[in-house]
Image (cartoon, helix red, strand yellow):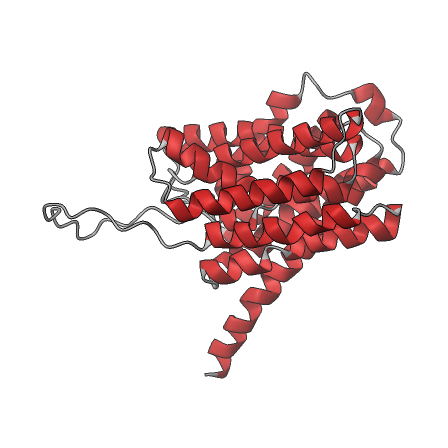
Length: 315
């Protein structure tokens, strides 16, 4: 019994720690002093080293389960993931970590919309209503005025990052039988040649102390953080994951205020609970009941596709 209680307590602790680390990511990006493409390139390099070493030590590279199909899907997801990071970091640069992070957390709604468009999934009236609530929250949070070019750019970059993350989630949900650590390893490894033409090595040579921040992004925010998240996913129900996931934007907003003095205004703050509430309701909504149909053939021995932990919406 004591061992079981220890496992149940460890899951929330692991995910909370992962979300706290995720909330500090923006500071590492800004303090590195590098441009977004250069930051993401080296995040992929250091992240591939960290995840590759972990997978090797744990023996995940043996019997990995990757096939040409699953590898291709993981690689496609990697394309979406690395450019999602680029756009998110561009949003940090254009506005603030707080603003970009809150807007970025509209991901679940793009996932619902893309699921309807790409996978022909049904959107119930309740989800449409919560999407409207989230949109109202987004309008309040943005606080964008017509002449505010920087905020408009930041808003556009953060929304683009959210769309790309949703696309990556849809692709990754189609992969089964492969450890998530290996999927993440494929994704960051794909990012290395993909972003190589865009990385500014002249800029990187002048970073000095910035190299420590870049290494931290790969080793801590891509290696340690992902390992903690995936360990927690195995122990927690979706509802718990969805709730604990909001540690990430909360920490990001506190850190942005503490380190850079950035904070959202009163009107913007009114939009945050709308996005949070709508996100939770969409994430935790029960599937729409299927229409009565003829009995399906029995499928003993076939494992269902693994559920995607998209509810965490971690960067």
